[in-house]
Length: 165
Image (cartoon, rainbow, N blue to C red; front, side, top):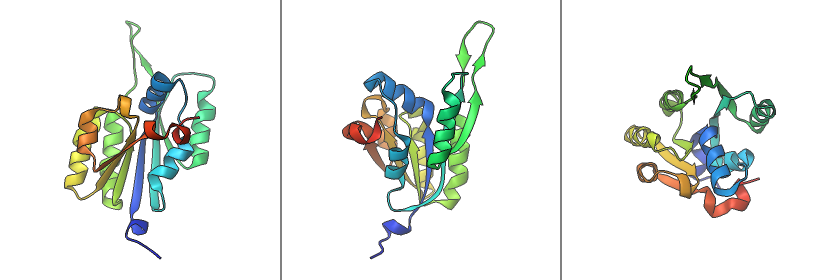
């Protein structure tokens, strides 16, 4: 039996830095991106899955990027910038938002895997455009305004055994 749910087209946008820091801060563990993608898509049609990562010259990061690709994510990689005062910055917010708006014409549902409240306005915009927004993040580190702006919120903390390695 086929349902309307089965016919939904889904895009997944994963903020790897946000998820990594949340999982480390709350649990000292890593995210299981395979389980994340499976839960985000469920039995719907995946259009695209994109993971946004930062290259910080860590020895294990290239194998992590490759693992993401093997799971089914496209990777967007940004090099970390170091400023003369020693501070560092790498931010994907604008790139993620632009990709989400571009995907909106091709999906029924956009899953944002992040806890960053900066994406609450994006969720409201997508919902106004008729796209269902599902946020997947750790409740303890997900901004309330993001949860409120999303159509639904999946708290990864409720299923640690599923979402953490």
